[in-house]
Length: 421
Image 1: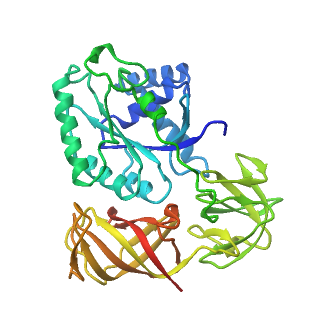
Image 2: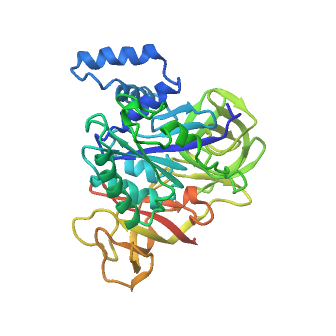
Image 3: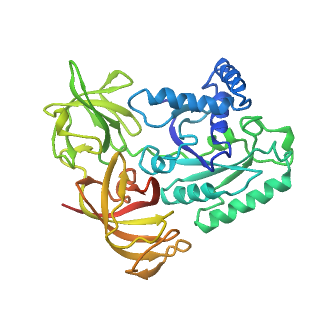
């Protein structure tokens, strides 16, 4: 499995622009989902009067099957190209996609932005592009989808492409890196093979563009950090915390510390996909047992790290945030919930330090009285209970977070510095 380098790929874009269909199509074209499974979904889709949704069904069914499993909150689905193996971090039609995208379930290296040719840039297109930019997605491939609906018109493609380029300029996303490809995920045009319907396009197919992505160096030399998703008691083994290794290496025999709960001990066993392994690295979902740590000593939201370089616990932290939506204004004293890796902790805005011009990144105002939707700012936050979080310049995987309130994502942010307890 590890003979090819691994890439995490997010599929982003507005609802109904065809993300699920593209994912299903990619899995099908790369042989990750066999033909008979697609056939089965096709029949099911037609019975429900949703002919044409078979590819989307593939993803949604995987999502449901996975919801019954334990370790993975998101439809992580694997497919291979000639050069890489990819894990898709996508939650089709999922309202919490934004939150999941931010809180590390999807430290995606690259993203495919899906924009429907018949609809153009829509509200979530903006939001997702903005987030990708804030969260450090390296490369964006832009799939202008549903070309079959606009009769494969080159003019429509050019109009939508220009619209997206303007959006990318607004958020200072380097759009030269952005590869634009006209596709029909439903018909399969330009996904794995060049389409005769668009002979005017001489660029790469989606799979070729994926093969061309720059290789990411895994964060193995960073200190170990494993945010805990759940803690189980398994007979014959004992307490087993489960989580995903974000950085560093987890090895048996290591002394580890869980923060903020403060317990720790020696790693006795590590299990991955129901097999015992001697070590695990970034991206691996693991269950592991630590000598002397009981079920009540640790909880979801803790972060495991080496005992001699334990995860930081913030008294306060300074962060750069982007406010996506808020019905009124945000002032000092506001206390929403911060979702960082697997932790959810209420945090109070202690101060709003600077307002940033999102177009230039320059400081627009020192110590503003308030910030509102559309603003970028540097703020100081005080967690209401212990929270382990890291500066994004040191450990980016644990340095980004979402701010949620009233059932929606209010803002996204990254940690600039942590003032430890």
